[in-house]
Amino acid sequence: IHRQLLTLSRWKIKRTLNVCMLPFSERSCDQNKDFKRANDKYLYYMDSELRHFPRKKKEDYLKSLQFISEIFCQKTNKQACYRISAVYYNLIMYYAQRNGVLLDGLIYPSANTGAAGMNVVLRKELADANVIKPDYVLMMEMIRDSCDPKKITFDSASEEVIPDTVGNFHF
Image 1 (cartoon, rainbow, N blue to C red):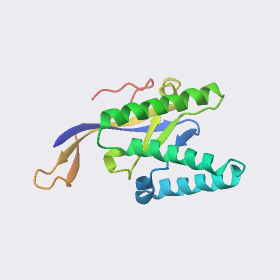
Image 2: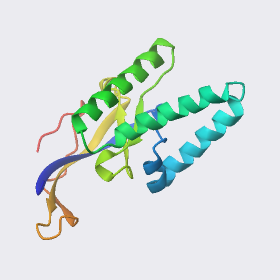
Image 3: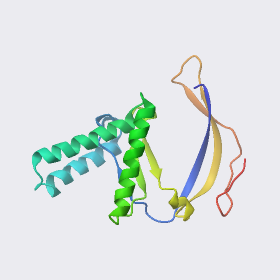
Image 4: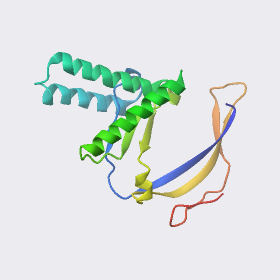
């Protein structure tokens, strides 16, 4: 991709969001200190709070979390990995709701950054209920240098827009 339009937005959050995090990919832990810290805390939790679990069961549980975290990081075979990650997200959200757990979304490693970045997916209902609300929107154009594909610039492609009271905006 040499040119791509992007919509950037800033959101006001009216309450603390309760999100699940997938910090179990080795690649993401190597490249992102926040994933590493979350992974270390989770491993500590497993060792201290789940000490009564059989060792093999804890190992299998951790391997499954590492596997799904790696699926979210995959840049190859995107269609299959997207389907698996979408099913995982929907199952997590379904079982959280079914068990009375308020879960607003998921933080996962970014495939497009080679697992270094963080992506967040939130439930649509948060915007519908005005728990999150956009307060600033801007179109940007990503331009990749034809001589050096690693060199990317971002230029404004619109004026900044402040959404109306219901969140609508026009460029």
